[in-house]
Length: 321
Image (cartoon, rainbow, N blue to C red):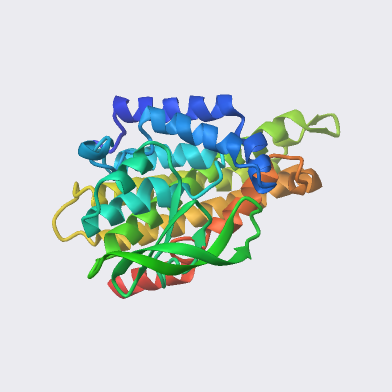
């Protein structure tokens, strides 16, 4: 079996990476945290033009009819650039949730065209990031929703809200597939963020001189960064194995939900380690809001518990063994 990504996947990753690099996401993320969403929405529109927003949406609704692997490739790059907003909910969770519930038409096509939407699925995701369109699944009932009390997180670009149900769209809706794709998409984001923080720390270690040489030449710093590199490379196959499982490309009897949980745990651990080690290498400057590392530090902390807390996911793994 070939475990390498295809040229198509590499091209998708390169396209998303180039688009987000050119867009200068850190500056747009800071604008988002101050309430100016227009700069980020311009990027969302550009991603929609490339087909990223519609990867999991059927062609009949304006999507690409792609799979979890393609979504994971795109979300890793989105994480690498720390793009703010309810991206997981828009690109991953809602397309799967709508498909499961039999919702079609304008609500689905709007996602493919670049509209941002959010959702809450208690108890795994009891709160939702703010967006113009909101949806809620409670006791198997899918409905539109309105945002209530707002909850600030450590990430200034991520404001959550409690949702109240509105118009009922479907009932007896199974949510496991939507929850799993949300968990996987968040894992992919964390994987990308871990890689980005490793790069930031490595570049700084090469440029920062102390005692007449770069601090990257010191063995202690090398060990710090090597630990992160190992954690990232150990998490990546788990993330993509989970994507293969969701796409049905694994042997019969594979516990896909366990694999998804393992992917999020490993990616979260890698991102958390990367955030701590990068801050150690950069020192106090990495914690200042002026440095891009601060965007990754706060987002990592916020996403660790999104779409499945580490404790809940570890419990799922333990129960499956």
